[in-house]
Image (cartoon, rainbow, N blue to C red; front, side, top):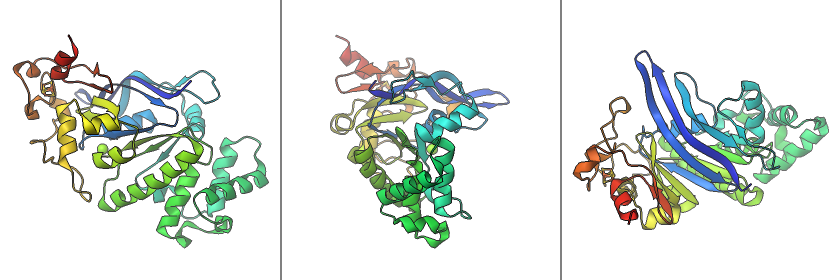
Length: 329
Ligand code: SF4
Ligand code: MG
């Protein structure tokens, strides 16, 4: 099986006193083994909601109300739908099949524990029969992968530089050889710089170890550099998904074109787009028809009535009525 994650019709709602608000709706995509998928869109487009649902790290009021997230183990055993999984089975899967490197990566380390003990904890919980000596050997190997000498296992996080803590966090995420590493989007300027560093490390290790990566960011230019495929989200839906090459060279959705042409400032969160006037819609009061129509530079009358479905093109899929017309002979 060359697919590691199969996401179908995933819908996540924030359940409030007056019902649910969908922050992520009908999301469908497949992630290939070893593939790097970028997810981009403005703030509030549903990117973070999507990955917390994928990794099952979401907390109420966010609730997955429909769809499935099937993880396919590398050993060829049957896929597991993560949506209905018990917390206990999820915990087990979390380190061995997918790992998460959060934006505040350095905070993932326990400040009052020696580095080696943290690695041993994770390893001995998730790798049955590893033993104390085995854990020590594996820890040295993992630290070596990110250029940290084995004697650092005796250090506490505060005794290490920021860069070293960052690399240690990545090594820890890879401790149990996950097949998928998920990276969250940075929120502060410091995190933006850090995300590039962390991502560079993760991608270097991916070339050696072959795991897949999902990286979420508002920085489309970063994804155009590093991702194999990119999904663009707007108002909780994927509006375009395809190869990075196609989305850069020939984006099919007007929103993707706007994002690409915006060149957001590297050090600021993306709140307005130079290429696209206006702001993302309030998810509680979505426009009728295509949710992008109030901002779309090429909207036609029909756009305020009809919700476009994703239509397959040779190198991408896009949800825009104009694309649909071109694609239908
Ligand atoms: Fe623009 Fe209409 Fe396409 Fe929506 S469906 S992106 S409003 S042209
Ligand atoms: Mg977000």
